[in-house]
Image (cartoon, rainbow over all chains, first blue to last red; front, side, top):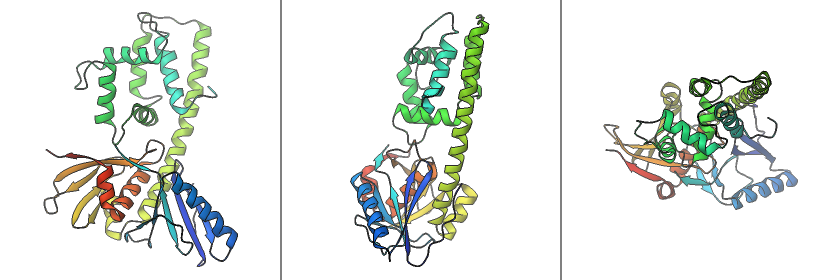
Length: 85
Length: 226
């Protein structure tokens, strides 16, 4: 079932959409190893043509498409490659 | 049944259960099953009478956003598969006039029981994934959108002065800003849409539409409403 994720002020989360709904990767901006791991995951998904969106807040504010990982971001949603149907 | 993919379980069950008990057309491969099923049970639909036509027709009309046979089959299998009327009807009709041996019955019942368990596990996982995806989608909606989504199962977006409507599992619609009559349908989805919850697809559509409308329109297949 869905886990409740409460982020610390120094944390960011990357949500990768997948068959389970999504998989979350959380990093702490003060921990280099976690930032590096998150950036590595971000880059590997971008190579697989995922689209990355910075989600701003939780009240429908427009997300911004990004191509470079920024550890200061609070929330990033990774969407698998989009195609026309 | 170990080793079958979810899709394979259903197809195998059909293939084994239906064709091997059909004394008229004792066929053994999936394509023939499909053609037989098509000619026996689908004639007269707008989709035509050949397997490909029916398959395309299903794909086009029945499922939203699917563009290949695999998507259709996976979704049909997931939503309407084992234990549902269609399958039972086909199997029942196929069984008429044929008596299986006890050994055959035991093998069939074991196979069907295993498929039923696998199907129920898939359904449970699917339901959990959809619930999770609904929460994620809701978390990026505005209060107004969230209320509309809860009430109607859809939400509207104003993007650069154009009004769009998103409904999980359906094509994105562009609406007349005043009458809200549908002007165009846009078919666009993650490449693995058949594997992820429809709410994830809706989330993807929303994010791309809002962040990069031009790219959305470039990728999407547009159908203008009549």
